[in-house]
Image (cartoon, rainbow, N blue to C red; front, top):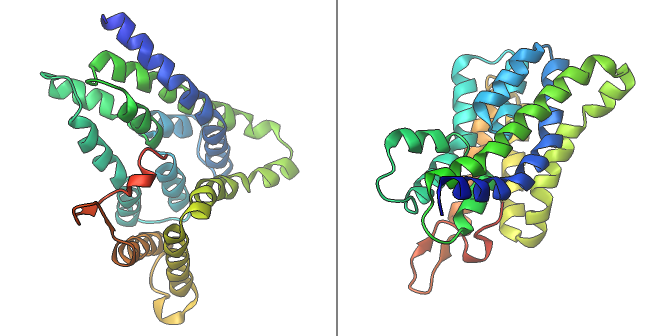
Length: 248
């Protein structure tokens, strides 16, 4: 296929992702402006980040007055998975792809675009990857702009009601896989328990909200790796369970 055909194939693969990002990014835009950020700042954050959970967590830390260090570490921990996704996709790239091209498409790697790219047969070409990330970027940024712009048009009651959207989104993310995997339930419970202990036990009162998120995440992940190691037929540890590969 030529450049145009490859790009169109990528656009087709990213269409559903872009549409799916609209309601989530709408919620982000609404939350960001309601918390005090200007509309253009909220849109700029989405345009330059495309990190979903990282954006929500980082913006909430900004509202809480967190320092640069805990803000940086929190977003880094949340977004470390993108590094692993990039390493995985790098093994499938067409030969001779330049570093500049790799950097360009890596900006648009998300959980969803990673899954779509992973299941595509053959080498991953630059036109295909650029097409794949185009509509998700447009959808995420557009949704943010709409949510940020409409904030002033809503009544205080509706604004208050919209405040639960973020929590509903996270519940929607963790409940489906938790229903299918006991290990995920244990990991979530461990992270929640660790956060509650650090929040309410006086001896841990010096730990800020940002570092609580970091520590709870690390504790939950470490406990999961210790209690629920996965192995292949040869007894080698698996980074991702075979029956869970390809899930977003």
